[in-house]
Length: 107
Length: 129
Image (tube, rainbow over all chains, first blue to last red):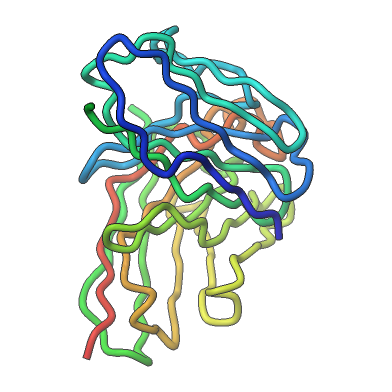
């Protein structure tokens, strides 16, 4: 099965900072990579699909890039509503794995 | 409104069984590939398994930790997804979400292309003696 590894596990940042989260796949997933945001006690929310396509209604400060085995999620200017946990997920194969998550905390 | 509503969670003893349901509305359920995802307390998201649409064979895939113990099924006449969980272990304790890509379903696309854009609110399963 494909394994997904995110880094860092925790990230401390301030409002206005540019934030980058990395996700690596143990083998190529082409561009079948999604990013989700989750806040405590809530279901995850889709942000990015097909590695770089912005989900409808998601602010343009979120962007995704990459293909194959290495992907990034970038928040261009962190806003108070963005403090949350972020997960990558590959949906290339029969087994759809999530990364372990990156918690974005207030610095 | 596109919606998924899970039910059936509760407290069960190790070795016991439980069936969760997920009622869907607002999208073309019969074309949707449906997933179960779980989250143990304080942990990350874990994909549990999925079922293809019946037009794509209605076949299932499972994560290794649940294979042979969990069975995902669907009833398109009721727009409902199920997961039958047998031989439950303490490590199965989690919030269970059903999810889907409703846009691929609406367009009749398979496999789904757009990520899981619809999630239920989750139902809690606790396995404890």
